[in-house]
Amino acid sequence: MTDIAPTTPRRGRLWLAAAGVVALALAIAFAVTVDPAGEGTPVAQTSSIPASAPGSAAPRDEPVANADPRSARAQIALARAPGAWPGANGLSGVNGFPVLNTASVKEFCSTRGRDCKVAHTYTDRTSYDSMTRGSGWTFEYFADFDGVLVISQSLVPDKGENLVADCAAGVYDQNWRDFGALMVQHGRGDSVVRLGWEMNEPTMAWRGLNAADYIACYRRAADALRSASPRVMLDWTINGHNTPKDLCGGLSTNCYPGDDYVDIIGIDNYDHHPWSPTKADFDRTAAAPEGLNWLFDFARAHGKLFSVGEWGIMPTADAGRDNPEFIRWMHAWFAEHAPYLAYEAYFQRCDGDFSQSSILRPNDAKCLPNTGSSDVYQELFKR
Image 1 (cartoon, rainbow, N blue to C red):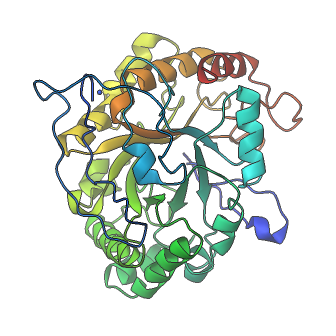
Image 2 (image 1 turned 90 degrees about the horizontal axis):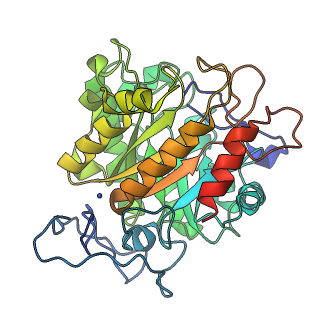
């Protein structure tokens, strides 16, 4: 999704963030194991039993009382049976809008009729320091959120394209260690970080103009971040539907940093470019390169769980109208793939002519009502 730079809520301004199946298995195929010893203890990466292992028991999608609601690892490790979403253990949520804080997330989730287990937030990107060691506000604004935090974290600040090579050379390793230490300090070391997300989107400063530099920068940041916050889960996410020829060699997965540096593979999937007027169109786009099913298959081939960290309707793009059926098709997709779906978060945003993905905001004069999508979302996601 095309990116708009945020300003920090600490400064008292509202801001918008960047846009841009164990089908019949008890064990979730998962690149990391849950370590009950505490967030300061490194967790070994292991291979898990394949979901289709003969003789494995059917998953029981039941809540687990002693699973820490703030622990990404503990929550993602819970069994999720196919056929329902969110179910008892599905991680479903939203970004904070119009402010990235607990109150905005709770307002959305209260309106939909079901608590959110995930809050998606973003760091400020005016400088390297502000997006790493200066991001304490990111955690302070969700200090009272009793769920999993997903943080979208850029690799360089806005307009910092020329810094990617320096990052790759290790110039900013200390910044990344400081960001990891900040996560632990705020009790959020066991969170998901979407590191260098949407590298195949043309407006991102860290976009894959040079795939080798992007990969090297991602790896340096990942290693330094993990050294200070060993329980962090790293999510490598692409922008759905299209990769320009000058980014990642025209294919997003050319910028994949490697299995050792990724815990979750994800996509930002909006109903635009192309939009889906019919289910056949939705399925065709999902199967095409850079699509939902295409990347899901890539994730499973690499033994990774999957995420949809941003998704939503886009009536101001090529659709030109509200599309409640897109909500229905996405929900069905989540339900079908629930055992391998780490989390999903709807993306709330409305800023005039560019983006009007917001739902469940009937009294916001700045937002299109998107009544059809709001009704369908509320119907399906309150279950």
